[in-house]
Amino acid sequence: MNKPTIKDIDALLPQTQCGLCGFKGCLPYAKALVDENASIDLCPPGGVEGLITLAEKFHLDPLPYIPEMEKKSKPPMRAVIRESECIGCTKCIQACPVDAILGASKSMHTVIADECTGCELCIAPCPVDCIDMVLAENHSPKKDVFRKRFHARARRLQNQNINPPTVEDKKKYLEDILKRTKVKNDKSSLVI
Image 1 (tube, rainbow, N blue to C red):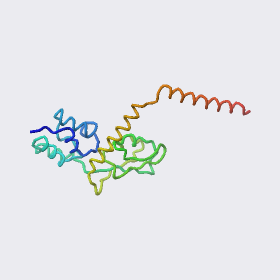
Image 2 (image 1 turned 90 degrees about the vertical axis):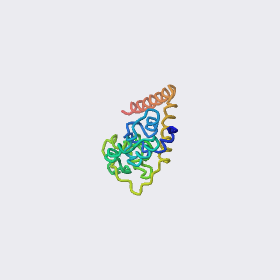
Image 3 (image 1 turned 60 degrees about the vertical axis):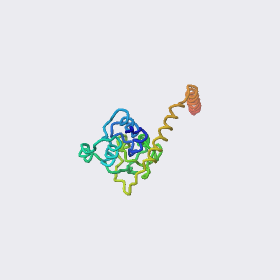
Image 4 (image 1 turned 30 degrees about the vertical axis):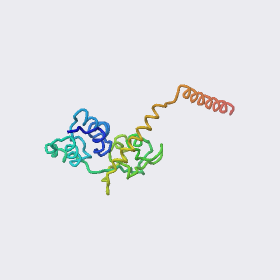
């Protein structure tokens, strides 16, 4: 009996990256399942179907877990921003694990419906409570797409952390601000 790999288990998970399992995404949960014998009943988006699939992979009886999973399983959802109420704070953009929200600072934001995993991570940081979760109609699971978007975002964020501004960059930035301020102050002192 071969033990499943982390990659095998990650491929079975819904890739919502919601953290409802108690881990920071589907891959960490897959690692915990394989390496730490985490419980197979921690994924509400996977529901009973996901539970049974995990049980089969780990050669476990799913029956004891089914009643509780039926209570906590979640149907496919997606976020919708009430655009007229959005203040453009970008907090939802920063929270989205798959970059499914478009917008800019102080501009209205919107959710790319087909790319939203329904993780709900954008709701809590929204200061004006303008995000609703709705049933994802005509939902077709896009686990591979969600996984690729999640990893692409993680790589982008890692690259930003790897190449932070240098001390010289920061000094130049401050010098530029000081020059602009001095020029502005010199011009205003000429006006009598």
